[in-house]
Length: 484
Image 1 (cartoon, one colour):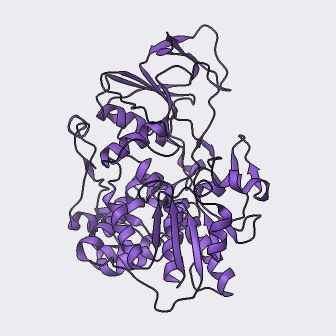
Image 2 (cartoon, one colour):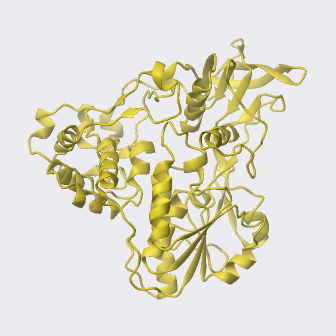
Image 3 (cartoon, rainbow, N blue to C red):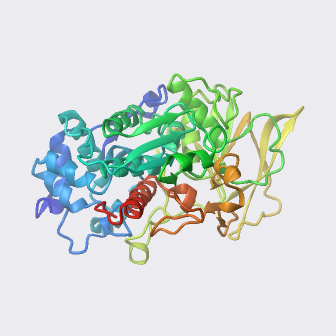
């Protein structure tokens, strides 16, 4: 643990942000890093709580040993801290920036609304490790002679690739886009995570023997049959990119878009790439000088809000069909689980108008062009309340209500009925494979990440990639030393 009395002596402090008026003028990260002594003081608050829910199944999907590395940071042992952190999480610089931190919700000190700033310490460990030169390639000393192909270079694919390469296998990663990273690169805005962090990991992985093949759309310009013939095992980590059908009349109007094409476009602009991309609309979508409506209340919707403000939107309104949550949760009924309570993202704090318990009835327009969004209030069962209809002016509307499964025009289409597809309770699809061996219905094909479990967090994708790597290593070699 950290300092024995640290949690009583030291107040919880979060990393500060640049003022909203400054940060909306650029797409760079805007969190102001803490100094090393400040981080060490925050790590010192980690207490000897007996049962550390922070790294159990309620807190951290990858089971980060949070009390251990908090103690190491408190004592200034940054080298051992990053080794400990890497033992469970391949990419702490990703999760330290974009994970919603269920570990902090599960922290014992959250019973007093003052959890340890675990996410901040995690990011600091990773950044310090790069600064000190602790993160270097770790190539396998003995090669297995086996070859593994990984489809998709998002967090699940990257985690699996790194684990398998370190186990001695020859690993080839096939990515549809022009650069590795999947939706880490093309979906998450730079103001939440700059893409040089992905580039650094890719270089490390190349040093470990991983080969990246970008611009290869497996199932389209390279068949699954050819891929399986070239490799001893194939792992499908294609993500869940199919937008959920909103069923809202008027989606055909110019100015109505799904969220992801908008975010992908802007990330490609920031990365100085052409906005034309496989599978995404290429007509420019820009919010400058416009009234924007975002339908949805999750992280993707929030990313649209922040992107629109940075493009110069006049006004951004976010619609959430859920009722306004309470400011504070009932700790004794929900802790250590994730609580439903009022949360304001950094993007929403930049000036978004938030409408709760509101349904989107239709998009309205003139001459084929969007002019507004017709809404109404709903009851506790999400049924429209008569007489509460109103129209919000809109030049652009983004639908951000989640994803219903993997894209269907590549791997799934190529595999056909050989690959068993399941359905969730909301009608979404997923590739059928369990979370023990990650095997699909096709011999020699495994699946992990959002393509298997449905849309989820980056930290869950890392977990699945690591576990699938272990399963593949065991299947190929008869045994494995990779952690689960």
